[in-house]
Amino acid sequence: MLKLVGAMLLVLATSLLGFQMARAHRDRPRQLRSLIRALTHLQAEVEYQSTPLPTALANVAERASPPCSLMFRRVSDLLMEKGASVQEAFRSGIAELVADSALKGADCEPIQMVAETLSTMDRAHLQTQFQLSIDALMQAEQQAREQGLKNARLWQYMGVLTGVILVILLY
Image (tube, rainbow, N blue to C red):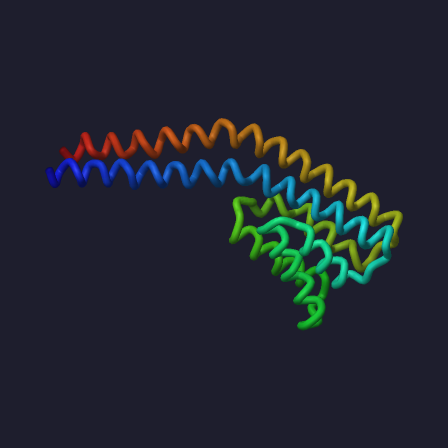
């Protein structure tokens, strides 16, 4: 009886691990879509409403969904309270976003490119940079969606089958 309970717990644990990994693959496209929307809001705030950058970032943070909203909130706070440069604030916010989400570092490179140009370019060049970044994020979202469909199912199966194989090997 104890062996049966142990075997079930082992299969359950590996299955949960597999489903957790699958969830990360499914969340990535959704988080990229949220990042695209947030970047579009930031573009509107900066270009059309001429809102100061810390205020624009705070407004974007209110509209965006987590975890992207947390990144924009952190960048806004760093700019307002600590007086950090735009590039440093975005670097810190992006590092926090990558740590707390399913996004990869390469997914956030377009955001960093925008951050590097925010304080140095005029509106015409900013519009081009925003559009390039949004296009890059859309392409990353498409790739993430395609990979997510394959990899999510793979991780689910691997989790369950790993548990079954371990039970077979141990008993």
